[in-house]
Length: 244
Image (tube, rainbow, N blue to C red; front, side, top):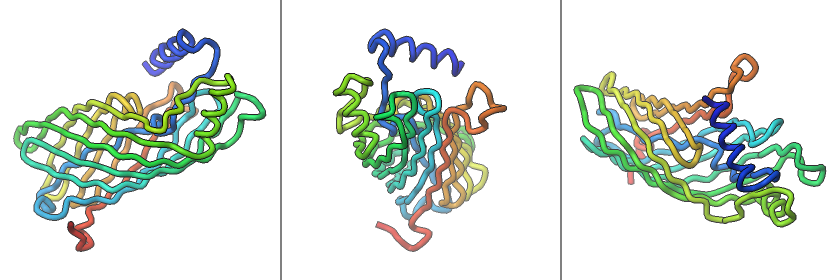
């Protein structure tokens, strides 16, 4: 399935952009952060989280790599049939460009800022919640990689989006199961931007949240990390007596 999707995307790029390579902002190469379900032990406590996630991904073309670190603040509200959260974040990392030309190839640093809002409606069957969510937001990217995309586009070497405001929008089905009063395991599949397809598994253990998103490669024997892998961790600030 991955190879079919890649062939389709490359065919569309060739149709609309000719022979030029197309480079996208790095935020589009990562996975959308998941929505959080409270546990009963922290339901009445603070709804503020600090988080960090790490992304390792293939670039748009052969021999290209992306590494990103993102730090975020989330405000979360959970009710019986609705989850609402908003997030602000900053990220930094590198994109290793290869095959464009000696003047353009090399490791490009970058940093960015952004935010998003998530809504999820769900219904409950015993300890299982099933729902559908919507996420939308925006981000900006700066640094050497943005300068590369900007100069390459203007010099006719590559195609790229030079906009400073980058829209993000996705839909996601979500499943959450409450194993105990302090442990909730959930999964969701974001479809949209960032990531195009972003499956994730999330464990909330008494206010400490661990999540993983992974897109496999065509040959797992050669590349266990796949096309993209993201590890994330968040912690409820009320654990440290911080509520606001």
